[in-house]
Length: 88
Image (cartoon, rainbow, N blue to C red):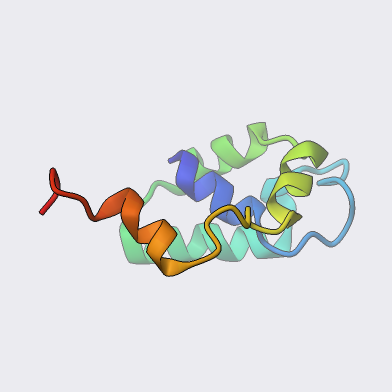
């Protein structure tokens, strides 16, 4: 459920905050909830409850906007983390 919350909150933000009515009243959140109900059989009331508790957190948006770390500049450096003797 937390993945769904993060995904919906990552939708384009029309303002700096959810506004006085909260996330469940936002058009894009309503569309997202409708899709989750239709495609994945989530309960509309439960999703409305979860999104109603969501709070805009500028620090999270700032962290999402930062570029990825460049310490793993090449595929070889990145690959070494995952392809090793223990995993092969």
